[in-house]
Image 1 (tube, rainbow, N blue to C red):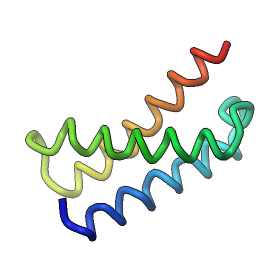
Image 2: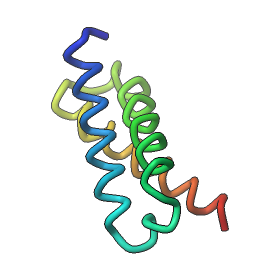
Image 3: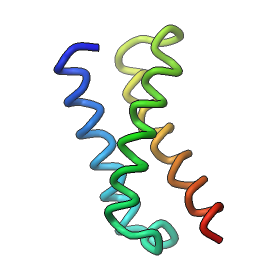
Length: 78
């Protein structure tokens, strides 16, 4: 992973966490947790699908990974 990819994943994860904080149900977990989980999900989604897809799709999978982890945290906190 090069530095540009690393920064892209940080930004994608941070933006997903920010959006999750300001949308209904995910707002209950708080911004710091949403941010950390989203960034972790972005990296997870990126690594899982690196071998399967091209770069543009990897960003979409990174967003998906962020959303899935945020959903799991919300389910676990219930």
